Image (cartoon, rainbow, N blue to C red; front, side, top):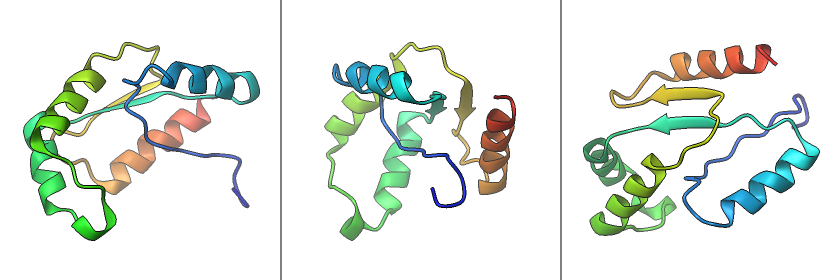
Length: 103
């Protein structure tokens, strides 16, 4: 934030209090909603490959529920990214740059 007035954070949008947070953010900031989709099988694989010492442990069942609930969230997305095949960093950064340029 010292060089850009942009902040990004991850949220599934599936919790009831997400909408309270979203309303509060929208009252003060220009909020862009980005949906990043990844199929459940890819989530299982990627979570299994992460460094467990820096992530909260999660069971397969909890991951299944989170993935299902997040997939059912319907919002006016400014950008949708299908990350089924693990998009490159450059591609994702480019998509975000385009979104920010579009206002």
